Amino acid sequence: MRQDTIAPPRVETEAWTRRHLLDADDLTRDEIELLMKTTEAMTEVLGRDVPRVPALRGRTIITLFYEASTRTRASFELAGKALGADVINVAASGSSVEKGESLIDTVRTLQAVGADLLVMRHGSSGAPYLVARHVHAAVVNAGDGWHAHPTQALLDLYTIRSKLGDVRGRKVVIVGDIAHSRVARSNIWALTTMGAEVTLCAPPTLLPAGLRPNDTPNTRGSGSQPDVPEALAMPPVHVETNFDIAIDGADVVMTLRLQKERMSGGLLPSSREYATLYQLTEQRLAKARTGALVMHPGPINEGVEIAPSVATSLQSVIEEQVTNGVAVRMAVLYLLCRGKSG
Amino acid sequence: MTGHTVLSADDIRRAVRRIAHEIVERNHGIAGVVLVGMRTRGVPLAQRLAGAIAEFEHETVPVGALDIGLYRDDINSQQLRSRIGPSDLPNDIEGRTVVLVDDVLYTGRSIRAALDALADFGRPGQIQLAVLVDRGHRQLPIRADYVGKNIPTSIHEKVEVLLEETDGDDEVRIVRPEGEV
Image (cartoon, rainbow over all chains, first blue to last red):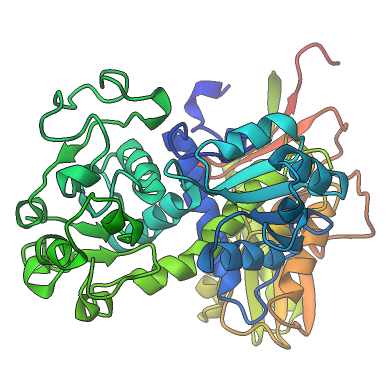
């Protein structure tokens, strides 16, 4: 008689148990793999003549955005609809938020009208965590302050994997305003969890506390950085303030949006100086590995963080990032909505 | 868990060959026939059927893979596996004879989901069903056109189909949870 141990592990045991998706920092390798596999199935659905399946029929998804967004909100809405869910968009402007309703009261109201899942973006880091403690509905963080943007990290990872395969040992350079970037922070977690070598590149004023050149070297990862709140800690990464050195041999160059307020805040002398030192130009890209991927979470400041010719070059996967965003968000909505009693 | 073998590797090989002949006989050849395996174990079975047909008909039957995860009506069930995969169907199933292939036919709910999924890819002229094992206990008005073996079971038992391609070995066995008679 066969021993049970001979049989390979059965895929049926891979279950998703997470109720909310608030950041990429606590996702395990297995969870990310399951998300990526699920995204492959969603990509197939989106390639059909009629990209619609009944998986989430009867479920209500509400998007609640306290900050402006085009691609994230549109892709969550398309993702929900492709899965057959009802999707309602609520913008803070024009809602009772303008009458002074608190965040908790607003989300309780949305839950009372039948939301099974809340997709929220908020200017304050941690806001989705607060909401998750007060509602039964599943909560997806679509960006909170400087803190996290997990679905962006997942779609970036999916895009890289679809081009390069396994990211283990791949060199990913993230260049730009790391300190204020929720995109960078979530990407760092997802990429390092999957084994990529991450290098951060920015002027010292735009590097997070604990990673600036004069700080204690970040060798032990989270926990050992002085004066850094635990929620803003980071896994081990390389830091290089000179972009021409950082980009050497890179497999992926991820550029970030430089926000206008950084200039007025005194962190940068001018956008022209920033562009001179940190813009991804054709000359700089030539120092990366041949065929290295060029990424940007959008919206782009052309001629500031990236040269227009690079953004539209054959190496650019910026449009694929947007397209993959729908499939990744379908995977997230599907996994969070299933297995939950009505 | 205690279990006993109901189909050996040889039994499975013979059943697949017989079903392959039945498919060709029923459809007067294989013109317009498409084999669609239901993930996971229906896919290697469909490939084996196509291989057998190629041997004695000297023609190739298109083989596809169908994932029904997004069409299930039991999405609330906690035990349901999380993993889903992409479907991969031959170009055009419009007007063709689709033979759905699955390992075990039980309640019929997977087949219902598969019919819904197929409808999203086109309108086949006919849909037939081939299964390696029919264990009974149908909850829907669904029956198989081709059956490897009818195996009467109790609902407390579990039918395990192991295939070389997915499990390293060919065997069908009935497993009874410990403590049940």
